[in-house]
Image 1 (cartoon, one colour):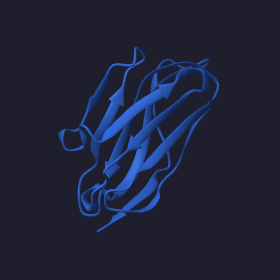
Image 2 (spheres, rainbow, N blue to C red):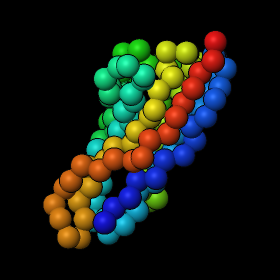
Image 3 (cartoon, helix red, strand yellow):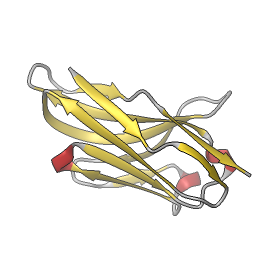
Length: 120
């Protein structure tokens, strides 16, 4: 079994910063891409940022220049540094990873979600 555990969400004023973390644990053989998604109230889930195993990154247009995704392969952890936060960034943020375990080929795993609220 694999678990993704997120941390770092919270309440922040507009213009502030938060750093999200997501640690993967379990019978992990390898981790391919890791990503952050978000779902705002009344909206569909959207991909915020993704980082490949080679550390190539891609971002949602609305967060480019404000958010930075990174990973620590030794700790099976992905981060999302969020700066210059706006009220429209308010959402539940979910960690996602493509993981191969000692028992199965690559599967898609999700964290439980962490709430980010940006006040105006």
